[in-house]
Image 1 (cartoon, rainbow, N blue to C red):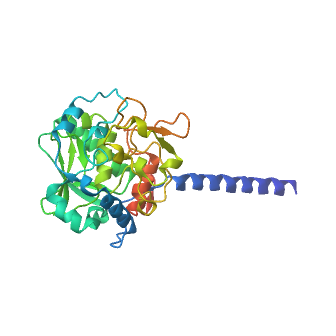
Image 2 (cartoon, helix red, strand yellow):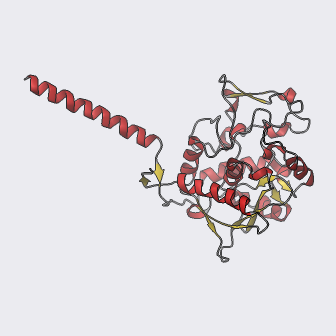
Image 3 (cartoon, rainbow, N blue to C red):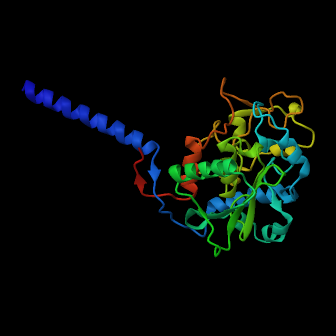
Length: 306
């Protein structure tokens, strides 16, 4: 009888241990390249509406003043280089050549890339060191998500052209159709891998974390510290526009701006409601960034990663 009780105790403990292991594994799964496409994608509709609300602020041309600001950026500062831009929310730019396309069919601007494949070309004017940083960012997307950035063969009509003009760090949002630029001014925008990944995350369809509709539950905005004329960079998306993919607010998202973004007096413009939490980082994708990308692109087929 004693032996039976001991055996049952062992079995129960093993079941509990197995349950914990399965739970931990499923909380942060890794996936293969298999992606389900949905042409009637509600995620795209939400981003489309958010972009439409930005209106004329979306459209423009690369800005030399932004280039000067980024060239003078100090990597030791609290700011990220993309926060120095004069574009919508700092780094979102739709070229005037795309204006008719995006005004008449903005859904295309927020569409997912079919099967998660993003053809790209890289300007020949990047240094070997800069190209290595771009490839490091691409490798992290390949390791952690099912989105694949692949060199363009010449036949793909829709692709991202990665350029390095002296106009800052910027990208459009989602797949436009045709060629679309993603600019990484050297060296500022290529100092940290996360800056490259930030712009790439725009290109695959994501907006900024601090503009989520429920952000006031998590951070406070110090409007009195914001540079005059830049207040619209802190406008919240409407609830129906969120692209959070069912993932909670992420203080550490690569898409979250720093505490001093767009500050006129070097005082915080964004403050976490959780004491001691630093806002944003540019080391790479956060755990929740990965979850959001996997959800938007409907990654499937779990696989193990060492």
